[in-house]
Image 1 (cartoon, helix red, strand yellow):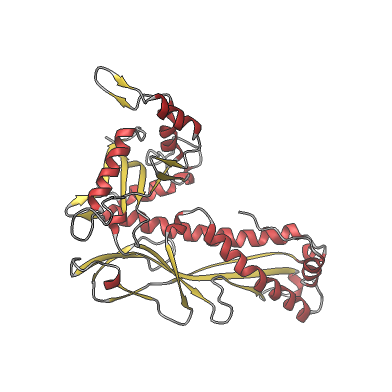
Image 2 (cartoon, helix red, strand yellow):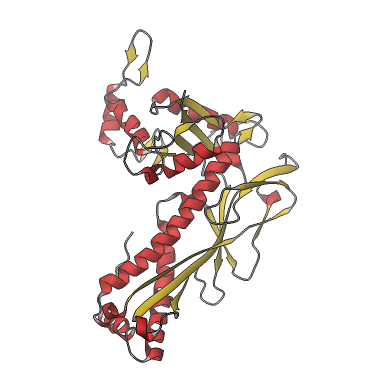
Length: 370
């Protein structure tokens, strides 16, 4: 993620004006840049390939209280009461609420904010790179908070998810990687969970079940290895992949999709031994695995693969927009700095709320210590 300001004559003059000794001129220039760049930052954040953007957005006026009519999102044979997952604070663990399907479900919203500053002399010298890096940091901090909140909500809902007494998680021994048999089984599990409202196959006769798989680089490595490793290891003989299948995997080394399923590779998932990380020295890289391990009190989870059905409307994000500008990210010049500090600051904030209405969209495969 990188925000770059073009070095045009108008923008250079605007940046220089931010360092003016005239307070009114400086503040007006800072605020003018904030009003221009705020919508751009919101667009960058919303298009980043992250867990937070797996949620469907809908906007509400910042003075309103957002809600969803549950009866429109559940079929007519749904139970009278459903379990809805939501978060009340950014980065917090999800809570589930048993709610009547006939009820209007209120969103719990929270504020994501960030504040940055840089020395005024960079503006005086029209250092567009420094100003651009400042706004990049704002977008990054908002995105990191969104990512932590989204991950905790998805992981918490997946841990608790059950349909007709069937757990949404398959289990394998730690140290293994995803093979073709596991891949096949998780697709079948998702299809059994994702039936039509009659309990039969959905409209068109095709059961989708999973559209996306979210996994660690090590698990993606396992998929790539199918190009040269057996796809099934038997007691007496190993079964290799066909030549055409090997060639397809080899030519598609980036693995953006596999068997028609989109693959999302993230560093926050990966094998860890509970206290130290085997794959890398940086223990923060596997933080989502650690979060799920903390949620699962019965087993020690070393790695996790998350299956998601994005064809269903279930993951929602409500975001407040400014009543005057229509912007999601409220970016303003931070006026806390005095003349003696020689600083230019910006404060950004965004109000949002996230909710999972139907946990049947979530399935997974966990690798646990035997």
